[in-house]
Length: 241
Ligand code: CA
Image 1: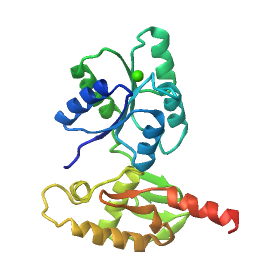
Image 2: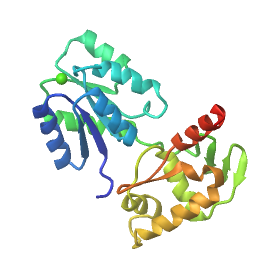
Image 3: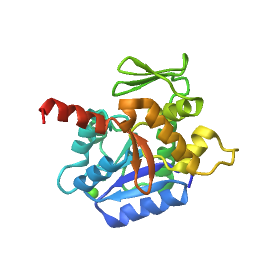
Image 4: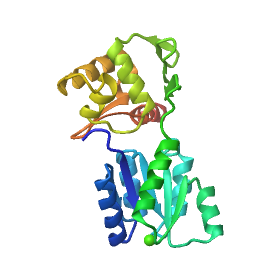
């Protein structure tokens, strides 16, 4: 399945969650359902989705409080977010948008309108094609000068590894299947085995040296570039054990 945007649906009412999920699936999205704040957080820790649909009224931590928290954390702050709620008055709409929601839908809503808003938010929040400088946790890539460095130390990468790293840096923390990487990095019209991706990921890790651990294998899913293991290594070093 190529290019299907992942949508995390955080909704405690199974009937509504199911309705949303079915409509998303029928329209080319990959929905995941979390019924409370704790499971939503677990889903986010596992993978960063392309968009979040977040119900305001949840058992435990409210959707509003979750939205504020996610907006304050670097790993989740840029995920497009639409709030869903039974509350429709203007004060609540303002509170939702103030918390960092990209859009707001009052229940009951038409699934058609929801899909239209999902697409609109994804279009607005799409990656900037003019972007040339990428940097995650000390690992930087300059597309204009074709330079890669890790904390200022230059690194030498082959052309495919460079393109692969550029894509991964541009979509950091997200899991990409081998098919998605083939599609995005090698292009749609070439026939290459998915195993080729593994070969280039291996080369990329070697070329990155100490930053190689940032390219993570996600079992059964694919690869992602993450700042996490590096942060853990630094913390470990600082703790002195
Ligand atoms: Ca609810």
